Image (tube, rainbow, N blue to C red; front, side, top):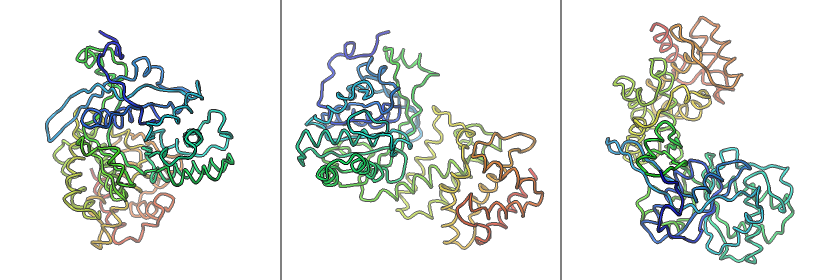
Length: 468
């Protein structure tokens, strides 16, 4: 079987590097770089990606051994049909490690073709580290490295407006672009760089907020031999992903002229406000996941797919989404319903094993962010608690008892949360258990005990569950 590199794959064009990407992990390679590859094929974008390894140790050497080449394997359902297809990604030039060659890293800023910077350095990556004390030596944090790169570009092009860049972080934090800009400007002040440089960043560098949505399991180790045989290449960097993809970018709409996603039929939305899309994703996709886990797990299911394919459990989750979540959202109903149908189809993906117990990590805080807002809005609109979400809530409380029908449940949460439920479940009176749980502001940020008929409804459902 042939090694995968630019010698064994003929006729790969060398394009100008238009994108610097912080992060070499599976997500960006199976999402952004996959999109760029399609842009190169279907439009006149004509640009390559230079990856920067954000940490000292990473996948850079392996990626460089394959000259940046790898395959994306899409597996899942599209309109009910199973699809499996691979694409050779040729848009990545390679990986540069600033810890090994800081000067080469800074020299990337001198590229006149450079237009974009994208990143995914994990949620912890966008942070300020006071130990990054200088622009003259490699820094630890991503915002510090970005500031140093921008400073070199400012110097090299003498602060020209034509050297401005569009920066699109993909880290899963709210207002990721605004937060990244805040820390970049903080480093400008921390390093006492010039006021004119600061003004250049404010005026010429556009920081976009963005929302990304695609499940990227990564390297398909369980089926890699079969995959490689079908490719006829020994590709050690195959990235498995679901077919669904969505990128919502908040900022000036002229980015569509530089990034012609619509011409490539890619699911990218450019908007002046991504908050409705974030709310939609959190409430429908993440909310359905969180609502599903306790009830599905306690009924003997182990994975999302088998739970959603079950007639009873699948119908319950569908009713939660369409009857109690969607009516609380302020977006066109047809758009919400279309997205919800896509989400439920994604849950049925036969190629992805989503273990319920893994999703159960930190379920209390997830419920607070993903499900509780839908419940509260439903109660405002209807002056009663949402019946299906109350059932999901009751199963969550029973789940945190840590035991159901003589079976132990492996709870994964903060020690304080687990200790609270251990203590509260020493009670025998279900009404007291519910009251103490709902009034714990540390869990929910509010006292829920007196919200409409929530306490009474939860108590009744807990009684039903206890009799099973």
